[in-house]
Image 1 (cartoon, rainbow, N blue to C red):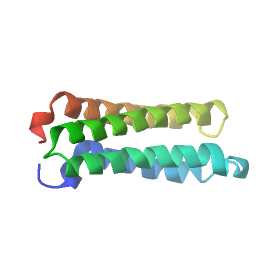
Image 2 (image 1 turned 90 degrees about the horizontal axis):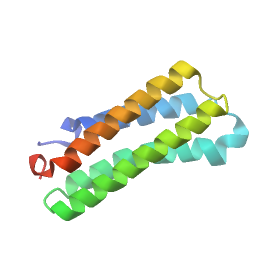
Image 3 (image 1 turned 30 degrees about the horizontal axis):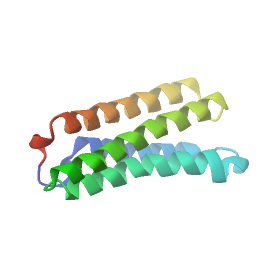
Image 4 (image 1 turned 45 degrees about the vertical axis):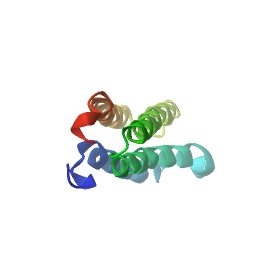
Length: 120
């Protein structure tokens, strides 16, 4: 594992964060400082925490700690997506697609957590 960009979880998380950013542009203005901001921040935090974990992979405990943070932010992203759907800001097909990608990222992070020796 040479470059951060080779880490699938990171690449997919960046792609999902960008997709969420684009979709959230059409959320109502009154949501700007609540749901829109929360959804954008937690989806981006998944990527940021993966990047921090990657840089700390020489220190297994720090590596796992940042991975756990990333996993938690990924779970939070799913919650905010659910609110966006329930509020009618995203369609059912969009919701299903976004959640599917979110779950895949969760599985990838989980695999890294279960097999840290492959990355450290």
